[in-house]
Image (tube, rainbow, N blue to C red):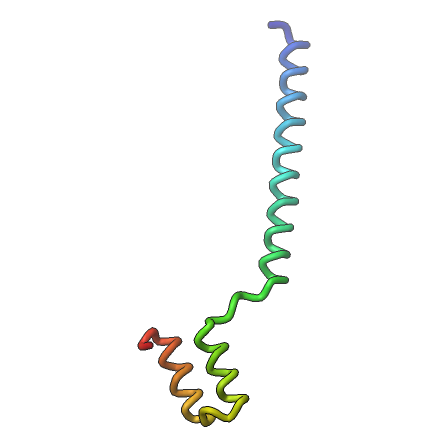
Length: 75
């Protein structure tokens, strides 16, 4: 191969790598933004406890005790 072919190959490889890196960065930023924008799913047990607390079925003290138990994995 002559030096012209090597230069062309280097330019093509550099362009490909630049496009690849740019694409990965854009995808990474999009994934990061989506993960920050979407709140994590709340535990269904805690949702039910909130409903029961709002309905007056359990006391605030009982709510706290049960939430701590769910978070520890005791329930």
